[in-house]
Length: 438
Image (cartoon, rainbow, N blue to C red; front, side):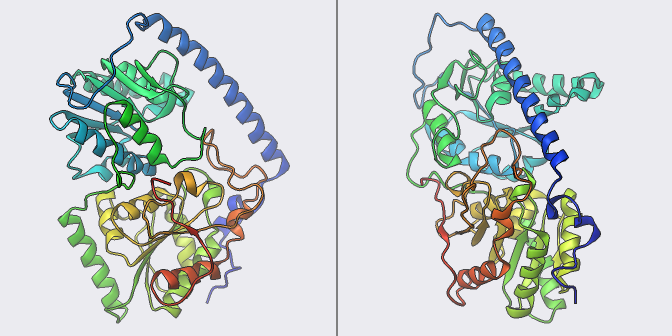
């Protein structure tokens, strides 16, 4: 059996070892240059906004049921979890404008997560972040994709567009030609919003769902108790496909009544959010051997090597579905599990939105801002003096090159919490779940 110290070659560098001083200095220089470039862009776009906006005629307050608001666009071109956490705002807008057409713009790879949502009429798919890479500026495909996307966004002639994506969202909403544009003033380029909302994210310690609901309120909606919890629709077809896969895996192991536990080890928005692969392997081995669980590994295609390494180190039979499920299938899979264990990730928020029991592992990110929205979820973390440190200015990377806040969260503590969450025995103290209203 593989030892938890037998780290595969693919994990010998990067996360599992501290970055050199040269690498950290280089990263600091890059961050400084990025901040200067962002400041220059903000000044330049502010001049464009001032030259093209009508500041002499402030618009009237947006009110629910306004018959002039017939077409609404919600722009959320961030990561998967951000899209999930924006659905409460869409639900509030649907109540405020029951007869309006409500569309949403997301990155193409995330469109499937909104499949079946009764509050959304159409999902536009486009990634405007391709313009952040200077190499794409000279690529013909970048220009054709952008022009095509903007043409599709302008055809509906939206009456109201809501930017939930900071500065890039303010540009997109401005280019749609929408008559009214709502977004946080501190996140948008100046004069790009017709209805700027004071403040911005991370200026106070509030959950992401609250931030997006404030934008919905500025657009005329009235948030209600319970809106803070996202809800996703699971299709019967995807449910049937995932049930067949899980039943076959359980039958092959000779057990038909064991708990199904999904582990999501990846972290798209920064390596510091990752729990070490060797810890995941230790946990998976104990869940499989001590609890007789069917342990399922989930993840995106670019996380397949990480899942294989965990499978190799675990030395126990696991069901590796990393890179093998679509987003509709991932929703269906998580909805059928007895427990989902994940770091601060999109799949963790999906699990909460489909009603799966959740244990969330937090380190650099603040669970009061991005924690699970399910009221019965458990948040495990090791509070140290520098955690949480993430401020959304860049990806979550440890400034010391050694994310102790995640590494020191022991597999034994997570295993005990899993037994507690499954109703088997008591667990060590954990932070309460962060409701959207916290």
